[in-house]
Image 1 (cartoon, rainbow, N blue to C red):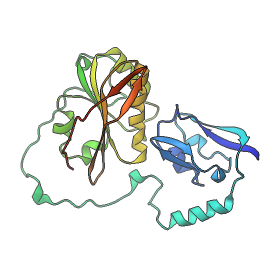
Image 2: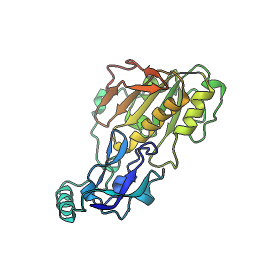
Image 3: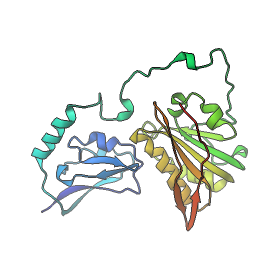
Image 4: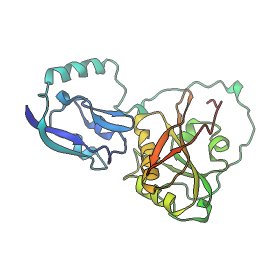
Length: 253
C-alpha cells in the first residue's frame, strides 16, 4: 500500500540515537553508527522522531510500504518491557562497577599528559601551532573516566580534542574537517565508548576525514566499563585508502 512513512538521510545522521529513543514503536535502530528504519510495519507515520533529530536527517515520504501493524508493535513492546533499561539509552543504564583496590597502586601521582588548551571540539581553534605535525586524539567525554590510564595510553604525545555527540548540539564533522584541512595532521586516533550514541563522534570524524581530501592514517578504540575493544578500520578519502594499523595493543581496563 502507498502510505506516509519516515525517511532517514544517513548522510546527515550522526548516530546520536535520539530518534530511536523517541520512536515509541521501536521502528528505528542504531546500526553501524547510523539510525535506520528496520521495521517499516512498526512505523505509524506520525513522526514522533522528527523533532528529536538535531541534524534534521528525518523527513516524511509517501511510498509503497507495509501497513502499520499495531498488534506486532504491542507484542514487541511487551517482550521488551520485561527486560527494559531504566531509560531507552544504554548509556544511562545505572550500575555499580566493582573494583579490586588491591590491584592498583595507591599513592602514585599520575602527571597530566595534556599538551594544549582548550580541549573541547566546540572551543578549539581551526588553526593553531600545536596542530602542526600533530597526532590528533579525538575522544568522547566519558572515555577518560572509564579508562584509568587514559593520559599515558592516549593523551601522551597527542593533541587532544573531546566532545559528546549526545549532549552537544550540532555536528562536529564540519569543524573537524576544517581543522584537518588547515593543518598538517599526521594521524587521528578516535576513542569512544561502546554505547550506540557514542557512534556519533566516530562517524563525525570519518566524515571529516572523507571530506578533507587528505590521506591520513586513523583508527578507533572502543572502551567499555568491562573491557577494552581494539578496532582498526578503513576509510576512503577521495580515491585513497586510509588505514591505521595496530596502534595500541595488550591494554586492559
